[in-house]
Length: 260
Ligand SMILES: Cc1cc2nc3c(=O)[nH]c(=O)nc-3n(C[C@H](O)[C@H](O)[C@H](O)COP(=O)(O)OP(=O)(O)OC[C@H]3O[C@@H](n4cnc5c(N)ncnc54)[C@H](O)[C@@H]3O)c2cc1C
Image (cartoon, rainbow, N blue to C red; front, side, top):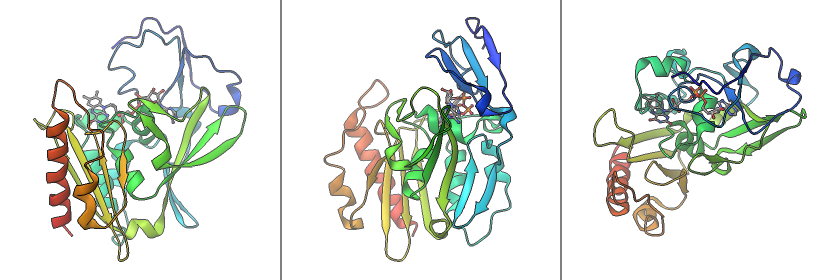
């Protein structure tokens, strides 16, 4: 879709060359969402393709995924077999209610920063204890736990001029078992519920998403997962009632637990 109100397109090769930021500016990553609907509030797009950030690398104890890494690269990368949690990454990308064309273009950072309730990567990142490195134009950077990043539907902790630089996943957590479950009324519909359960020897964690506005982490004994759904605020809208979303979430939790 054309964005006729956009007046300026910038494609910096260094983030430092952007010295100011206004409310009608946006970072442009894969553009699969930005160009999918009108953006009447935007006048300037800052394309981040030319920043040449590394896409997938291992540094010390972390797998580091650059924000501009296209989702397709996560499907194609020659992962170590012992990193069992990578199956979760692949499931998260397959769970995108989108075509191959979108998966080729869309980036990890775009998916996380868009912060849709149906966001597919965020619940996995929360479950795997990932953290996000955020840069600001004033050259300061900070790290935040994935579980603290998304505040609500299309709401994150990002401030104007902040950019998600990279995602860090502890290598030890990549050896965890993951079950990623998704339900939608039709395969190409957005998810009504997503459940991600990760397990290692001592630990089990459940994250629910899509049925709630923002990924919701449940850390308790697995026998208490169902009871802990009682206090959760499930989305009620024209697609489904909150009760239906809760029931579907419970079914997905049972299904996920059966996989271990
Ligand atoms: C048919 C279709 C189906 C879709 N289905 C799903 C789905 O099931 N689940 C889902 O989550 N999404 C879905 N999307 C939405 C979207 O395409 C994806 O979330 C995609 O991953 C966004 O990535 P992108 O790189 O294209 O982001 P862009 O469209 O370039 O950007 C999205 C937003 O993130 C901001 N942004 C991008 N990168 C950064 C960064 N590094 N730092 C700070 N802000 C940044 C942009 O300014 C913009 O506000 C769908 C889109 C289409 C067209």
